[in-house]
Image (cartoon, rainbow, N blue to C red; front, side, top):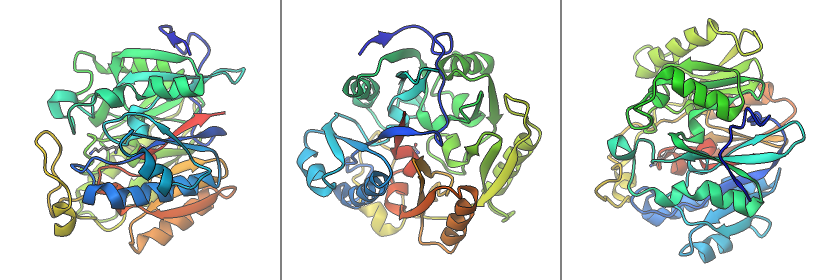
Amino acid sequence: MKLLNTIPKYDGFHMPGEFEPHDGTWMLWPERPDNWREGARPAQKAFAEVATAISRFEPITVGVSQRQFLNARNVLPDDIRVVEVSNNDSWMRDCGPTFVKNADSVVRGIDWVFNAWGGLYNGLYFPWDKDDQVPKKVCDIENKDCYVAKDFVLEGGSIHTDGDGTIITTEECLLSEGRNPSMGKSEIEKKLIYYTGAEKVIWLKNGIYKDETTGHVDNICCFVRPGVVLLAWTDDEADPQYSISNENFEILSNATDAKGRKFEIHKLHIPTPVLITKEESEGVEAIDGTLPRIEGTRLAASYVNFYIVNGGVIVPTFNDPQDEKALNQLRELFPEREVVGIPAREILLGGGNIHCITQQQPK
Ligand code: KQY
């Protein structure tokens, strides 16, 4: 594996859409008791269900600490590869490599700076040094060369691409103080374009209400395919999410993508607000420096945080009347894929969802 200091776009590489063919998926195994309740046992069960669902469609590897290796190996089915990868927490979308490919289908990784969603300014835990090393380890295991983007803080969940020249992101996230405070919007845009090989960045304003990542796009908006987007939505004017979604709808309605297309926008209604219960709150160990889990806090529940695999779509469900409607809407939008719902409350309690814990490796 070579570490590269050149620029993917100049080398002829770009980030494919998630809906394009994968070689496989990467995940990490949850264990920290100050983020996951009851010593992470319920979360581990949920992660195992996600990994098992993905394994029906494509190869999957789960990275796990030395301490948890035997537990993960015992819990996960035999056909899921388990490898030891030290980590601080289990958000492979955010700390893992972003993969890019060229016209000859050579795949390379990008190793961004990871600072736990805001570093010492407003990051969610400290330290994050092991997470920051994950991309090089994944690329080494996969024997993929790896671009070192060590002058730019970025998490995979803060960008989506259509694989055809367009990136979507949010100002709330990428212009936040805790990430690249010395860079302006145009400089950040250039970094995105040079590293993902894209041509145009669409800037939405804010992410899902109360999203602790400071507004990752992957919880509010994503591509179904080039020119077609899904936007998390509510018709409840009293919900703070209402104005956030409406503002993003306006932006998308007035935008064209890199190829000059107007967007076809589909509204995907959020579930009834999900709040942390007393029992859930009490199950999390309180540690200074880690975001506390306080009873009654609203979680950033959204069906947009699904993950597209070869021939399938893995969708979070919340035991909510909206679940079935969301699944059916996705079945209509992805007629050629099997849409699989997975109960995801235990993942949501940790601050993210299925898209946040997965990372595709393109074919
Ligand atoms: O991508 C995400 N949504 C990750 C959230 C991390 C939360 C850490 N407690």
